Image (cartoon, rainbow, N blue to C red; front, side, top):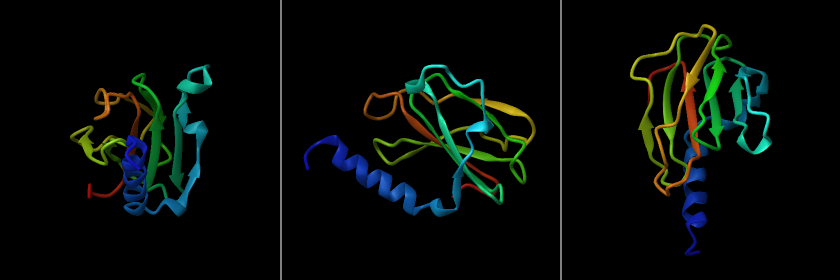
Length: 125
């Protein structure tokens, strides 16, 4: 119970409780130019309505995501899976056209590289 992973499980629970995770389905084809090494690949899931997507980035390499499957321009924010806190991403909505490159904001609060990118078509919560 004293290990950092115990706190991180709470962060994961709180994150999933804040989104409609049951509507998400994997869309690996939305990730453009994925790394060849499996451990460095980002994963992405979105809703059929095109109003929410969640991407897990295991490292600081960033990810190119095709945004044309969204219903409208997207707002973005970064979720730190080690602290449960959010960090700012693009300050303006990103057009839902073609691919856009997203780069994590640096090391997370535990000094690790992984982040979760949340993309929505509505206002930020």
